[in-house]
Image (tube, rainbow, N blue to C red):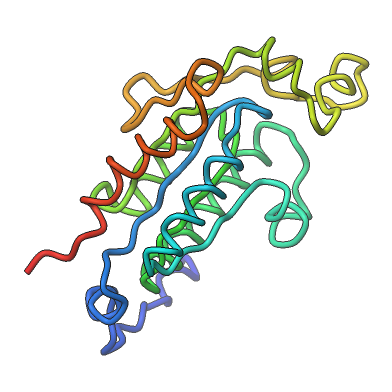
Length: 201
């Protein structure tokens, strides 16, 4: 018999809906996906700054921070990448249940993994944002020097170089970060997300 059969989730009296009401806005997971250097974390940070100033309770999760702590036992193999995103999906679900607007910035190259996170969080609380930027532009930016190391073989399984990226076919929002000014992208995000944060009466 599986040990999981003995796990029974406890239903607490204070739920997500009550927490949302207390905070004055709905909780949401905004999932930024795209190549390293495409601008995911920059957009997430700028959006958080705006939402914070509007009185929203927010938190940004990004790849470096999560891998430095929660997922520091994982490497960059395909299996570890899948587990990395699965764990993050479960964490974002808990944070959304706590009433937060979670801004998650992860390369998350595999469609199946992103869809799994959507199913974990719930479609009504999940927004997929494709931060679209050509690999050559990301390489030119290369602020962390990662592409150069990947080209030299110092980093294996690097998305866009030695590992594939499965671009979202129908993202909720498509940002062309190499073509449009940052402020335009932020305004597109705000226009799409703000209606989703409003509580229904």
